[in-house]
Length: 123
Image 1 (tube, rainbow, N blue to C red):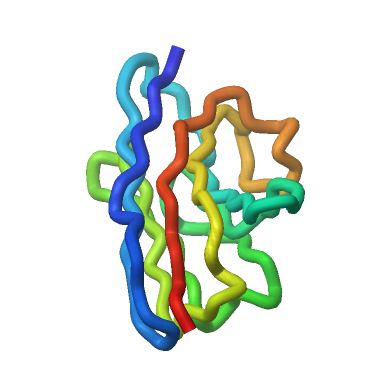
Image 2: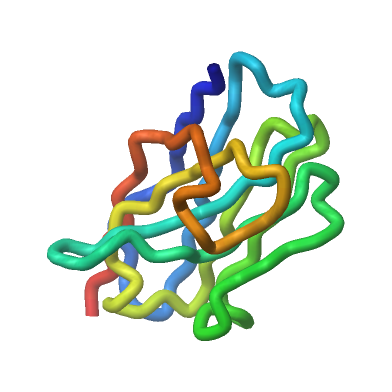
C-alpha cells in the first residue's frame, strides 16, 4: 500500500502562484506514474497532469498547459505541481494519485489517492 500526502495549498490572489507537493511512502518501489487531479465544489474530479516514474514524460490537460507544470523529485517518490497565473476557476481540492503504470487522465487507472489539499484563488 502506498500513502500519499499533499501539501502546499492555501489562499492566493488571482495571478499568483503556488507549488503543491505530494510525498509517497510505503510500497513505492514500483515504477508508477503519478498524477494530479482536482475537484471543485459541485463538480466532478478533473485531471490536471501526470508524469512517468522517470520524470521524462508528462501529460497535461490542454487548457492548463503553460500555467501548470508537473515534476518529480530526485528520489522519484515526490511529485510537484507548479501553478502560475492562478485564476478563480482554479479553486479546488487538489489530489495526488499513483498506481498507474503510465500517465493517464483516467482516474480509474490510479489505485492510491491522497486526501487532497485545498487551493483557493481570490479574485
